[in-house]
Image (cartoon, rainbow, N blue to C red; front, side, top):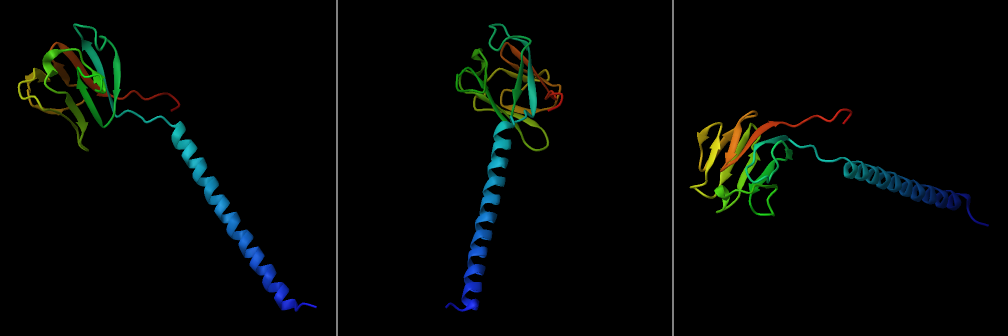
Length: 150
């Protein structure tokens, strides 16, 4: 015959092991649910660029382009926003949100860039509502559009 204390200890060990597995399964389930929810949510744009004038049609005039924290603009197909103009032939411009506002920078010191009507060949700060001219392409920085129910 086995001692009742030994049986009790084995029972406690098995119960503790089952409890550990239950906690582990609950944690894994919560992580998977959170990962699925995150994967289904589309990242929200911080702002948008409204294309006012585009002589070549790239980007199309009247189109709205949602932008994130860092957006590249230029003729290179690898750029976030494809701009068909030789104003940025030497390198793309970067539009970045820096915590307090937007800033445009470019590596080409002689780029034909105007911000809010001012010549800015090396870039500069932008505010919501400012126009941005990259050669013949004119864009306006606007607030991101809120999606109803989103």
